[in-house]
Amino acid sequence: MSTTAGSAPPSTNLRDDAGLIGLVGLAHLVSHFSQLLLAPLFPWLKEAFNASYIELGFLMTLFFTVSCAVQTAAGFLVDRFGPRPILFSGLALLGLTSFGFGLSPNYWTMALFSVLAGVGNGVFHPANYTLLNRKVSAARLGHAYSVHGITGSLGWALAPAVVVPLAIASEMTTGTTGLFDDSSSRVKTRPRISPMFSVVKNSGPTTRRAGSSRKSPVMGTGVPSISRTVVEFRPHHGASDAKLVWTTPGTALTRDSMSW
Image: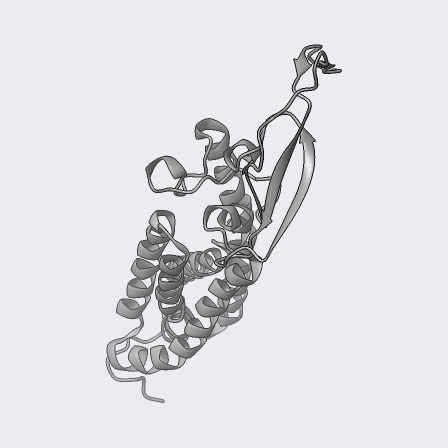
């Protein structure tokens, strides 16, 4: 049986086979790692971009839809140009989009990088299986496919195990996860009491009854008597639909004072 033009016959050397299987497996690990790069960060991204979990889930929809569509085209490109340049292009694109995610100033920039990441992720299966089929000896193809599948699952397992501790460590040391915060056109990432509510200033002046002073059970100091605070319900990206007014001790709360 003749071999495909331009491709070397499969190696029978164990060392060569093991090296190629390991490198292809590593590329597959990177691919699956990138698939779960954003999902573990959803609690932080939700606060950073004031986005709902549905909106964040749509980023994953973009990623996987584009990746699915690109796989078909990538197969033709692999047949035309060979698997190695296509594989390296996918790795480079995933690396660039990873930096892009970290530098994204808003939700729609994240969506753009999700599309680009999907393009990079879509090339791996056509390129990987072509390399394995062309270069690995037939006696070791079963081992090659097993390693390929295992390394992909390891990529899924490693993504949250690496990303979440890094986010927590960054928040503990700097107060943010490195995402954009208010002080320099960035948004704070620390949890708020409720992202669906914003508390505005007092609707009236703080008053104190003559001769009255309440003692705080914690601090033991006098505090002003009841004051009114207005809380507006603000759906995402929209105006307030309702107002809830109640009385609360002390001065008016502000949105900043509700940030923990």
